[in-house]
Length: 330
Image: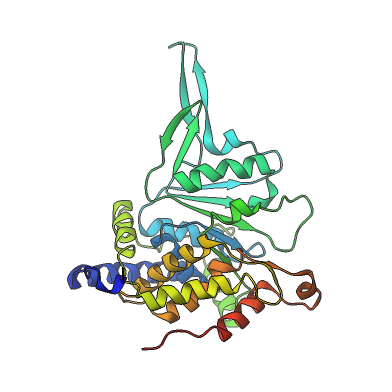
């Protein structure tokens, strides 16, 4: 079926949704200096109902970005510093025996929130990392055989430092695939860094993260409605076929050792739909697919050893691929 023949979103509802999304973006940018592409991608990932892996050196505003996003919709925010001795129960929670009532009660862990910041996720061992698999996929936690649903919307934002490998545990492929996108945060420009310095040091003691200026615009229930709206964004058959061609091309592209699986196609369309809404449209264009390709696919491919020796990254190879694969016209 061609999505372009699906029932169109009512114009007034679409306009209201676009207005909310644009105001959310403006509020987040009021706290996060620069990093406009990163803000847009993380916001789109939230609207697509996905999880995001954020890569960047410390001090580039990753935690501030998450706190600002949570503030825009009065969402519950939790942060976990992942360390080698972190246990799954420290993340999920555990059963506690109450001597007075002579019964067990569940003490819920920090995962029970709308936005969970898993800081330096690759510092925890595989057992703890894998404990996030169920919660990321099923939006539920099992404690002592009992399932507990998480409050929607739920989103994991995990960070990792690309420079330090000592004492880290690389994320397994199954876990990487659970992240809808992987975002890279780079250093700010000179002007942005000067603006950041003025903002953080003016009439302030310490260097705490301040999101007081971020306005709360909507409730968590509104984010759920926006996510349902994103799922109805129209995708023409030609655009879907283009997404499939891009993903399939990664499987035999020179320099790529392992290509993206079928979940890459699904993620590409999900992300492109959200990016269409953030751009003020109710339909996906080939440019939306192109814009989503890097964050969606960079963690789903493996660069060949020869390409690594030549200094080529996954982004370099994907950009070449996007350039070569013809996009639909008209």
